[in-house]
Length: 349
Image 1 (cartoon, helix red, strand yellow):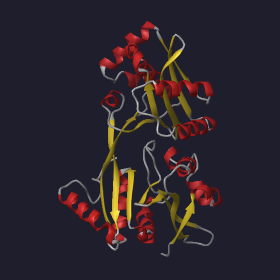
Image 2: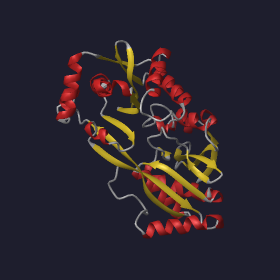
Image 3: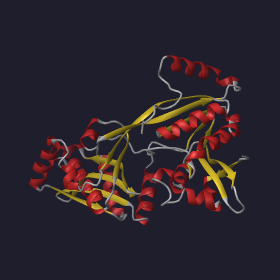
């Protein structure tokens, strides 16, 4: 079946009704699939951000065929995902997963002049689609683990039921420190400049490294507030902010984007108490079915999350590009050493 491949600018997605519908809030599974999120990245990216789009014709008159959009950045080193350190995932977007590999193969053939692609963090199904499609288009492609994602599936439990399954030490900390009453927690659902200033002050006084792009994060929080999806948690002691967390809710999932607490308030466990308050809010008030803790396998996350899954990195080089032959040789060496795979294992993620 003939397939049309073209490139679209992220800033012009609204001029393409089908793309706009595919990447809209409500259609996307989470913020990282949405045009507004990708647009925030595009305005700050070190290369050109665009969508590589493949469309098949409909089988009947006036019918719409399958479509797939791959968000990309073109840099001097080749292609990368349109993603940054805040992204929980990056992936091709389609309403027709059964046609994804065929559509991606058409895109991969069209992208051959870019020579190389390094795309992460991919969920396992999409990593498999991309690896097989790029190989079918003549690229040398492998996948390897990029990040660990911890997440929670509630299975219909309310907060009390779920909380009873948490480690005893965690529950004891919340019970003991909460009973003292020194830490006050609240969850804001609307953006307020004073709350955001408190969040930034806590972050600046925490153990965390400097914020990567505070303007992007603020713009994201404002957009989530306008959509009713913002959950900004703040903990105070004697009126002074000591812990802050940025969450959002979408499609039945709560996403934990950022959290921090002041080192000088550690003895009061404000971060732990605030986490408990936010979990209670999104489970009992928002009725979420899942909670996603993003990338990173920090040990403390195991107290709150029950499941892990791998986010993958696709590395592909086109053999016609001689300048990438050293990278191809290194990739073959990693493959022979068992550090890369042709596709993610079945059932991962």
